Image (cartoon, rainbow, N blue to C red; front, side):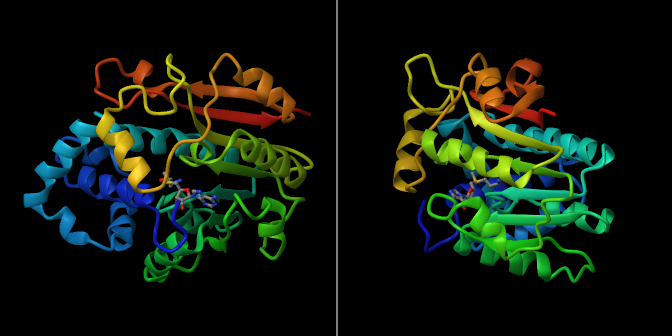
Length: 282
Ligand SMILES: C[S@@+](CC[C@H](N)C(=O)[O-])C[C@H]1O[C@@H](n2cnc3c(N)ncnc32)[C@H](O)[C@@H]1O
């Protein structure tokens, strides 16, 4: 991860959102307002020109087939889980490693009684913040800039509006794979301290491949080379069999688990990442 420029993978996800919103077959999957925010986060919008779209599709096929659709279905699943948590009384949503994800920015105006916070590296967050604030909406998320590999979550949130006494849901989408197992454990321990009462977590995590390598299971060698070039290599994975034990150790229990590729065998989707919805055990 380079601290001096916006995350390449966050940019890739924003570009995928813009592209899918322009695809007549798939645009219904993109939430209203998401593509508009993502487009403002792109520092090279010419990449989205009609003539370039075939190139992006070809690049997807050469790296991780089905990745863009995986991102969008993942985001829809997470949004449904967060809306469920809000329905159960959560009054605070914290998105870690938010990148150019639009969930908090879109939900904040719809749920004025709920606090929305986003944490990310400063370079990525500065671009996002400008894109969101240009919309001039009355409710926007609170932005907290921090490198979670160097700063503890508690320290990062100390000067923010985060309130330990409000029931909260933490969203960790597409981030844990960039943390080492020790950093991941420290992050879950820190969230435990920040949720002294009820709380929920929605997170994505890679499952190890059979050969032990950390990558999407249908990734090609091109993708591995790109992640190395971008300095965003994967550092951790958890198998679904090991998950209940890990969650128990962090004071959590499993509510629901999604393997999108298995749930949609009719679609070409990236494989190897699961989505987990967990709740704090009473
Ligand atoms: C793959 S992107 C995912 C973005 C967003 N969550 C999504 O799924 O659309 C990874 C994000 O994690 C952030 N990130 C990676 N390592 C981080 C760290 N140590 N501290 C804070 N943010 C980090 C990056 O800046 C980037 O925005």
